[in-house]
Image 1 (cartoon, rainbow, N blue to C red):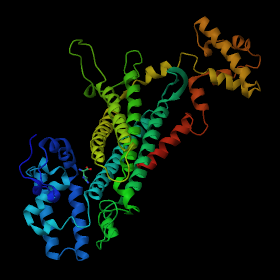
Image 2: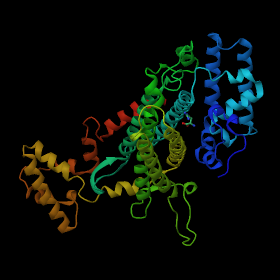
Image 3: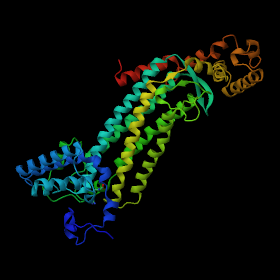
Length: 467
Ligand code: ARG
């Protein structure tokens, strides 16, 4: 077994050790290759902590200046890519602290008073996630704006609505687009809510029982933009609910993107030919020269697998953990980071693709003309003429069967033919059998009538601040 030569003393916690850590253990347990991402938050947290320690007499003013300047220098080096991260120092917290001590000496060694890596890591993680919530909220607003822009543009154009992937009832294209607007608006609300719940500072809980040193948790919380402090030090030390909640909210976003992707893949087939995805977002085949493949929606749909997987990873991670901090929790970061990268990139590229998407309105309207899509309207017509709905359903069912046999659509039948199915069917029936009549009759709240969809577009524009 190889051991690193420095022995116990080189480690920040080496005092009680007589042997150095095995190289294999250092390699196995290090997290610096991924938690270096948290450096900004670690440094901001340390600066706020140090300022509070100075106010409470644990650091002198000179020591505080040395610490703050040292941390700023480290931050600059990290940003310039010239800071040397050392794997034997495990994680971002130890790398920064050790470097500070090497630069400024004993003052640096005082920084960790009244603090543990347990409250430090959860502080960094929460600050990071807070920023990610904000950036995802912006990305969700951006994609919502594209849906509303498209809905406005295609107002009045119709397409088939589907259930069971079978033509069901004609709807407005804008209505279908606004369905996605609603889904991503809910995702936005979830992000706002997630941010609110996670925005309580853990710092000062120390390892898990709090500290006997005279500190002011609220002062640090305020300085770092938190809404308050967590209530129980043991809960805080082992809590990763916020990471699970965030990843779950991200999973919902990715699921919505995945469903949309599935529709785009279908709609761009020659069989549907409802949309034209811009060449900029497609790729060709290396063997079939005629191909134009919808790779971006396919990849987004595929990437939902890794996001769902990350959520499962986190849930499984905490499932059997006793209170409080356990080293298992170090495994929380990679799935969250991967989720952030995947969902952010997917949202951004989908918004761009949609902005460049063309709907084949003629083809979509044509698709509403077949499949007896106004059958429900005929049944409703009968209901208004006092026929019980179940009976109306069966009358229309027979009329549809007749059309199928004749190879025609409901509006192609003469009034005499229609009256053969029910004597209450009069000349006025043709108003409800037209696609336009059908769509515009659906004026119930949330329905697809032009008037309703216009209102929905305007409400969305107001919410998004679109003039
Ligand atoms: N790298 C650790 C993590 O990500 C930091 C906390 C370590 N705490 C400890 N007691 N070993 O969880």
